[in-house]
Length: 309
Image 1 (spheres, rainbow, N blue to C red):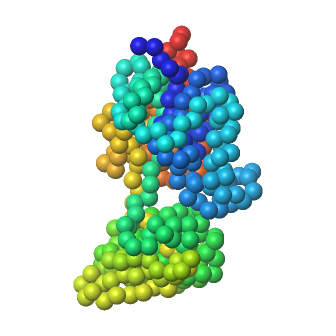
Image 2: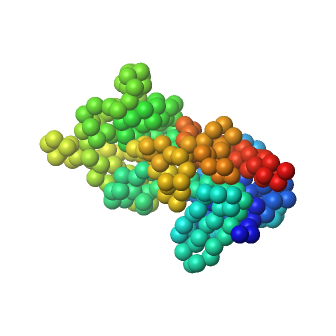
């Protein structure tokens, strides 16, 4: 079977676009596919203020700039390309789209990202970007001297609550159980923080407000008593869902579905690489996604060069 491209990249977020830029600059033919719009989760960020060398911008604008760069170097970028099947075994990898298009490449980089796990309650989608956030590092400073809530009770939730206490005037941690699923040291640190209070054994019912978030409604799971917590912002940390379904069962993943890689971002399959939020990693930022895209591209180029020698 002849190949259509040298490299196919699954995902047009910062990791995928960066991988495309590096691979295309090396004069390789590159196809970038994304099931949604270009930019991934980045486009949901209203203001990006911590990307080095770039003045404050929107996530959408930053994503568009990255896409233009990728295309300027020769990448073919196809958003809204819904994938039906991916076959990664063997020297030639194939991707079949739901419209019947079938493309092949010598290497594949999976950069399909992921999404924060949502509560799925009334008002959540409405206030994303207008008070509700899933990233403290991205949005914490926008709530300086303002009351906020943090939903969750694991390590991430409590670590971020402590971090957010540098900005917020008051933090209410809302958790579904009467105990935490976090390490004792971070529980103690959060409980010792004068800015942090706790609502335990709560079921979040929904979010209310006009144009911006105003309250978090929750009920006590034992008594049913409803509490309305007045806040200007709410950070939700109840887990993360990687978009690895298309390659499930082919590349090695952990129990959360995150793709396992080595330091060179190689997966267990020759010629298959993973970058960005879809892989096992602790920190998920635009900058770390860009770093992953760089490493994955260089590793893919090494693989192609070795295969040709």
